Image 1 (cartoon, helix red, strand yellow):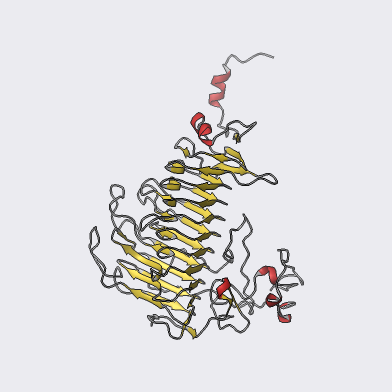
Image 2 (cartoon, helix red, strand yellow):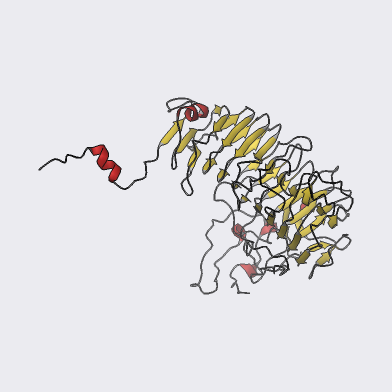
Length: 497
């Protein structure tokens, strides 16, 4: 056979490109490629599909994941705990930022304990970053911080954050996005347990789009959740307040406010640095004030576009009752134009259906319809944080499955229906979320939890259009006698609504 006279390297240039094989790097105290994460990143430029596996039961120093270590859309760089039986999660500790994603887009960070960052434990100056199955604590500054510039979409899931924040300006979670560099970015937060903050708000978001679904928040120094506009003094050239609207959706969260020195659980609109002009949708949340004194569920100030609320249960223990939706009409002058001090960007835009509040609650929006009132919501045990409704609860089967969106100010990307329970005051393992199954002929209960969780439902069920006796997918867990499912649920037919 005659050999080709074309050099092989020239022939290679004429062939179609093929994906470079992804690499796997190992990090651990003994017998691995590197003993520290920072040494790996100093010595290599990671590429899409690369995987970094880190041994557990070991302590590692702070690390910067740089702009030459990112992945690609749908093909991220993955930094994860190498899980073996008996090992605890690897711990990153120390540094100004314990881990920083420095323009390293498309990265997944999974399975770590992160603690002790002088300013921030997790700092994201990047786009399309996922933090999954993390335990973030002992953070004297921020727990997680999204940068004003060069930051985009960020997902936080299956994680626990506590013992973080300081004073009024350092928060357990503080997110923002760069609306010039990454327009249309999403902050997605789901299946997390956020609690015992040392300062600031458990969650402060200036992000363009915040999806806050199925989380448990408890014990902030100030409000548990603040949803406002970007800091007007730190944005990229070309940004104005009119560049984007900052919208947010809170679905199926438990929010427990225990701070005695601060009245508000949720604050919406703006602060002196930035107004959102945004639309906020709140569906199926349980908001509880477990302390005496003045209390406000939702506080609006300095530039909110609209708020709609459906199927929320709002309660204060001890015989007191909260204000439901209050406006700050005496706010100070903002730092940036247009210098308005009104609580709303324009007209007051409020809408809501089928919320439960105490009969003695104040500032109940007159725009709401179908509001359910009473003296107590009928939780199983509020003192023990068991917020599932009793059989006699007015919350049972009292919600609306697919709440209507107001035509004048709709939420274009809203979640159509509640899908999962929040964590029950504990960290969830990956994939351990539980589907929320309405049990009153598929009529949802008011609040974040149904009368019975899916693990307590003793099938078989006959679902509409399915073969008979389709059993539930999750293994049963032991339930107390108080949680035993009534006979009517043991072989019931779920009817479509």
